[in-house]
Image (cartoon, rainbow, N blue to C red; front, top):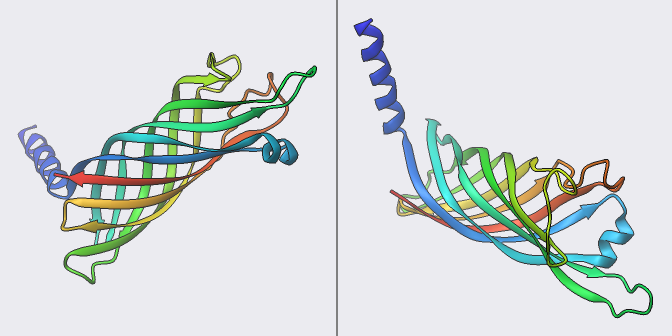
Length: 199
């Protein structure tokens, strides 16, 4: 039994030695892709949101590693309500907030001592925690699906071993709206810019 305890502590120590924690903040630039292309083009456009949270890097071998974390992500989309019954069109900013767990494979190019560029690709899983549409609070489970997922593709650079700048493309794979509510598929599309500080 003692041998297994010692082995477990050795494994934890090894993981800690190869891991690095940090905090990350950034801006999101989100739009929604609808299966009805004309509706998406005419009534939806990008608005800036933000993200913030904890990020974690784990080195595997050479320049290959895994990046994960726990993020609060707000995606904002501008919606232009069509004119109905002679009323003037109105613009609204719809806000969708979620807790997100990304899991990325990250490859770092180690040619330079100070600046280390990298590329990454992976998936994310998110859980909606709040949303407003047309200035009204939206209830998850009725008009919005709470759970979602997507792909993340990105690139950036680690500076001086403690700073990070990064760009990512957000490719949502899950339908934001339940099938029972609408037969039009609605998925996230967007860009992210972020900076991080590692300890």
